[in-house]
Length: 167
Image 1 (tube, one colour):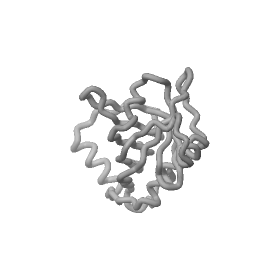
Image 2: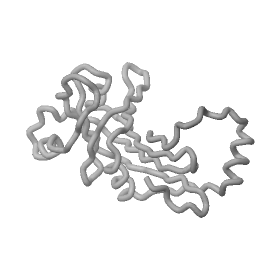
Image 3: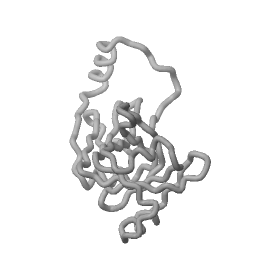
C-alpha cells in the first residue's frame, strides 16, 4: 500500500465524524475496473501482497514482483520461506495505491494458482524469469514463482469533482 500522507498521527474520530468529513469534502464513488486497466495498474506498481494459506493459517506477505502483459505475476524468494508455499497452491495477490488526504485510491486483486518456475524449461517459464524482479529483502532470492490469474478484479475510489487519482 502506498500512503500519500504521514504528516499527522491518525485522528481517532468516531465513524460519524469521519463520514461527515468525507461527505462535506465530496461524495465518494466506487468504480469497478476492467481487466486491461487492472493489468496496467499492476504493471505500474512493484510491491504487492501475496496471500497464501500455510498449515491451515492465512498469511499475507509483502514482496517485490513483475507482471507480464497477460497479468501473470512473477516474484523471487529464498528457499524455505513462507512465500515458497505459493507453489502449487491457490493464492491471492493484491496491489493498491491510497491517497489518505483526498480519500481516493485503487486496488487490484489477482486470484489464481502459484507455481515454482525456478527450473522450468518451457518457453513461458524462461520468458517470465527474464522479467525485472528486484527483491528488496536481503540474501539469495533464487526461487522463482509465477501466479497465473484465474481472476483479476479492481476498483477505484474517487470523490466527486476530483476525477481519477493521479495513481
